[in-house]
Length: 182
Image (cartoon, rainbow, N blue to C red; front, top):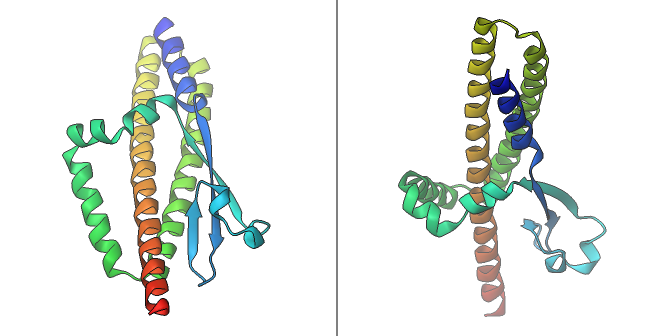
């Protein structure tokens, strides 16, 4: 029973320990969709119309997002980021935006499914009394933890894609501004 209590506490801690970060979506003068975490970068006339989003990052995720640590530990992630940059250069900004919006919806839906699964497991915990039932419950908890880890990785990949998109928009805006000044 102590093992079950420990697992439930870990699951609760997994979903409960988070810090929020807010970022904003707005349309710039050229009609491009922009994302920023600094409201001061949003033009004053557009601040009333901006969309605000809340990103949730746990303390352990913040440590894992340390670029130096991540580069040394996960070369596959570097390769994926390079591939994302190459792919983003080939698609138009509008296609990239639509893909990112779709990916965000997918991530949000996956989060809802994980929360439902967690609630279902917490109800099953009360019914697990025999050793076999407890072992089955523990297997389900392990599977949920694996899905949560996959979800967190997908979220990190999404954030990297957003950063690449924003960099690309900034680069194209600078190029357009330079061309207009010449």
